Structure formats: structure tokens, C-alpha cells
Image (cartoon, rainbow, N blue to C red; front, side, top):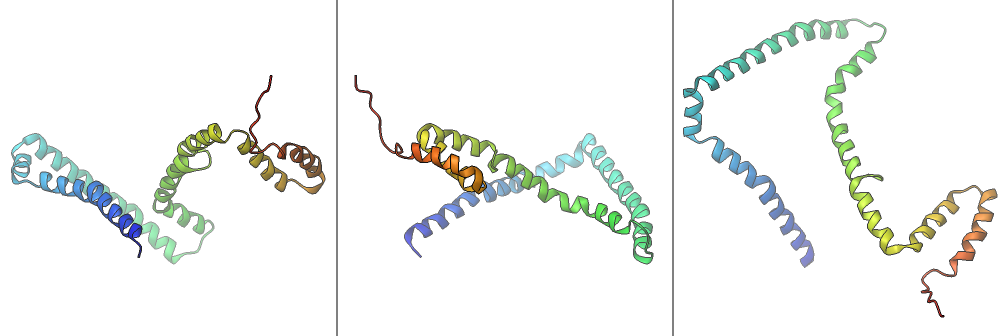
Length: 170
């Protein structure tokens, strides 16, 4: 491996140590201190909140079992119209979270995302006319043959000026 590969690996290890391991250590070290745990069991508001949370968790679990077990039994034993659709709907909560994350990344890094627009906006300022001609050439390649000839002729007329600096002589 080359030196810059080692440098990249060291950077990644340092990045994950600072932004992943250090916050986890801080939460665990500070949150599991004995005086905090004792305070939870001394304060009646915290005890009542803990009891309410346990009660809600037990009630929801019982309700889910009452609904899900008969439906799972019916879906396993019998064939009926729409069974595939019902099973697909059941799996939506398992499948959906990765798509939500991917949608978020698309909104940030996609073709029309925030970062992409910022980068393209910066390139347009620097590239100017070259970027427009590059886009036009891409369009020319994608057009059908019959319409491309007129566009090709107009682009070839403008092709000569790429890279040249024009100065106005008075």
C-alpha cells in the first residue's frame, strides 16, 4: 500500500473515533453513572413514567399478539384471493426505512439535490460557455438523426471559439 492509502485509513479511523466512538463512550459513561440511576428511583415522577412506559409496552404487545397470531394462522393454512397483497402490505414497515434514507440522500446528493446544485452553480460561474456547449453536444448525441443535422451545423459554427479569449479592439 502507498503512503496516501495509509493516510486515508488513518483519517477514517480518526473520523469514526471522534464522531462515533467518542459520543457513544460519553453517553454510556455519563448516562450509567450510579448517582443518575439512584436519582431515577428516588424521584416519584421518574418512577411513574417508568411504570406508565412498562404498562403501555405490555398492553401493546398483548394487543399485537391478539391480532397477529390469528392472522398468521389464517395466512399460513388457507389460500384466498389477495393473500399476496396482504403479505406484501405486512412487510411494508420492514422495507420502508431504507427507502426513506435513500430518499434523503437523493434529496441531498441527487441530480437536483442541494449539494449538486451548489456544485453545478459554482462550475457554471467558472466554466461559462464551455458548460453550455458540452450540454448541447450531449443533447446532439441523444437526438434522432433527422433533427440532429441542423443542430450539428449550428454547433459546429460555435465550436471554433471554444477556449479562445476574445478581446475587444477599439
